[in-house]
Image (cartoon, rainbow, N blue to C red):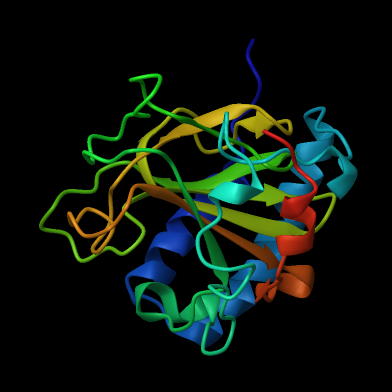
Length: 223
């Protein structure tokens, strides 16, 4: 018999979609969040998930390093105005855009001529994903993943992917391939936007996701 499905992960995925689409009140979403994350944490360790610290993190774009982060230093990181519970309407940009070499905008690395893999930066468990984006969608993140790291009580968001290669409830280790870099999302698919991974790290202690600037940690990771 295979592993039992992660029921609280599936519930989180549904909740995240409701939050994203403004289909649930913020108060109701907040009430559910803390309980779900606690249940996911229990599932993770019960299913053999390992304790992982930031010392084990890897750079989330294979073959690239901190020089691929857009902007000067962390000046593109703007936490002001961001609230997870605002969903697709959120403000701010508490994130890092990590650009690949793709001059002709075909989702392929210009040198290797193949898709670039997105790696799980942390250990954790996949709690939400979207794979059905199309060009008429107003969804900003496009094809995305949320991975919850119980060790750090953190939610990590990987957006604008070409494809996702893990499912809700999958347990991952730092460095595991989870997706490929793409151009999906309301603005990311436009020709003017260079191909990149959009990375967000939220501390979710007590069920209230708050953005954290992890630039100093990203600088320590080598290609």
